Image (cartoon, rainbow, N blue to C red; front, side):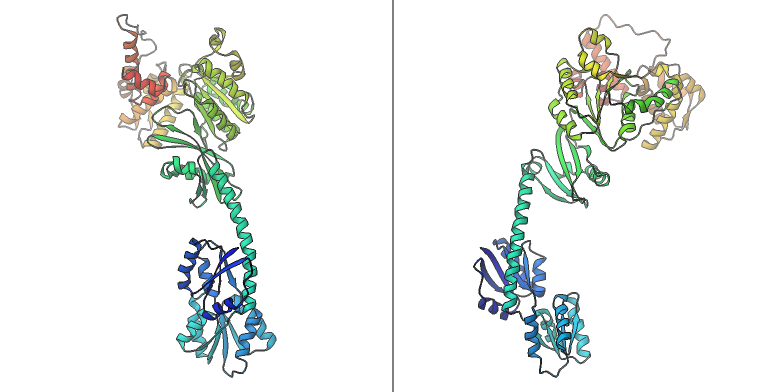
Length: 576
């Protein structure tokens, strides 16, 4: 049974409906209301569960704007036009027919065929009716044919109005159209309900958005577990924009004060809609399980040394091979930079880098496996590979065996693992899998000719990021800088240059200023510290931690990274 509300703009139409046989599959209620008065009735009908509404003319158009159920328009039939033309057949007055195109299109044709002397005028919207009637009155017209709006306005300007009524034939046609639209609407609604059920059943938080930054739909997991303000940040909307532009998935991370999320944005078949999946969350106060770098930039390999030139020349060979690459180098030699350069050489910015910390014993390998499987294409970087526990080594090997073929694998180690393998402290199968293409990075003490290049590079970055005015370093200062062995390599050099750029008031770093800043560093010919025999291991450990913290400007994240521990461990050691 089709529950139907018939809203008649005039009383005669309601009476016509009552006299018309109602089809057996319709349950009809009738209301008499016109224009704005009909809107509230229509809204209430939708809430009361009516399947559809039937009305006519401008009233039907206004109702259609405020309800989501189908609204069927009663058309003006040929019988209706013949009926009204019969009424005016004997009139000697000038007659005009004024209405919207749905009325005037057929009326004009009929007037031409029947040779009726009727001026047919089409209006675009209701606001044009009054001015059109005023013009007709000035032209000597006295009678106007039209729908309810036209007749009401005609009375206001002093014209006789004759309503074009709808007969039984038009009402029956409306029932046929209502039946057809109801069937289509029910089918579409069932389809929408099915897709909405699928959306709600997804085992992860999901949200649909438009290219106009609007939330179109979201599932219960998103609503119950997340806050829109936490997830839908400007960074995520930038990912949405990139997904629309690139036509494929974009990955990223959202970080708030205490919680962060790993998100995937992908364009739908409908090009103006994108889906956002929240793959996992993490506590930003703890070390992350893994990191996703979306749209990685190209980091050039700079330097004038033989080692830098060889690295630039061979970068493409490492990028093109499908085998795993192992980058070996002391802390601070730029392993991450080289890994990102290899990724960019192979993938550009189209695919992400997923990186994990080998010393992190809290890795969820199953979650990581699911994430990489979903990404399908990109680079997987394992940092501090030597820090993996025996169990983690087995889990990583299992992960590599399931790795999609288009994932580039790069491992970073601080020293050669040969001795660990020989002693049985590192899984030989894992080592052989990851070390087929080794890449050794020389420490800064063997690349002294690169120091000047890196000093200029760092100063340029500091100027861009913080507006530091330091432009360069005097030659005697540069020569003095090269006398140090830089055990912390390029990271240590960068920290020193940053301090110099912050504390130097001149455009160029002078030798005396450099000596002052470097007074805590030992030159290469200075004696090596001897571990005091009267100190406990815990005391020595505390002293080292405090020294590293001071050198890192009390940045616990950087200090923990240098010490090879996570932030939680660092915090615990500081408070014991």
